[in-house]
Length: 212
Image 1 (cartoon, rainbow, N blue to C red):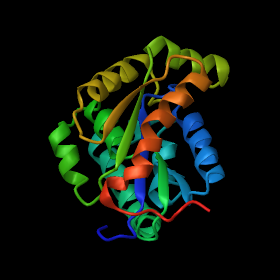
Image 2 (spheres, rainbow, N blue to C red):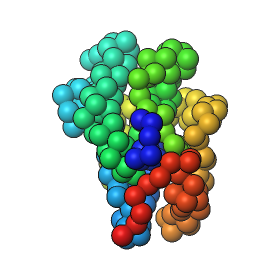
Image 3 (cartoon, helix red, strand yellow):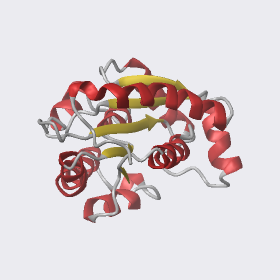
Image 4 (cartoon, rainbow, N blue to C red):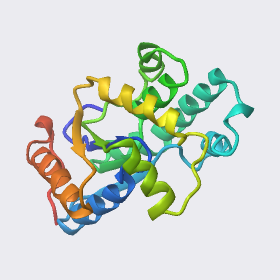
């Protein structure tokens, strides 16, 4: 991932219901308007392993914790190989809805050590920026069940999300920037832009394609 054509990897992390997917779409639209080359993607993917993971939303007990973690790792390997690495090599700004910090938090809450999960993700490109969206648990659950009208899946139970939030809050990865996601959507978007736009002007010493 070295060299002057390297793109930027910006990942959106946080418990379910914090609005990260909405903010990813808003940021993609804003950056595209400014002429930046943007690729949006997500994990779990729609590939072979991602589809297996999505089956667990309905019945997480159908899979052992070790097998569940393996599915996330294999899904990410495929994602890196087929989407992330090519896009970054071509100088794109990649916006990814969930990445390995989500695996650390959710699988950590499932009984694995943070260090062990990070070690298994050593193949994955480091994010240039990890936006960690934070909101009270009650707010997130209300958005899932009220605003979205969804039923909580097996990854979204209150006790699970509480453990996940605790692990997210304890992470010290250098790419993390915490975003208060409890306020109005427009306010959160401004906070996101205030963190992202300065990064585009510096690019960590690398060069992005000039906006058109």
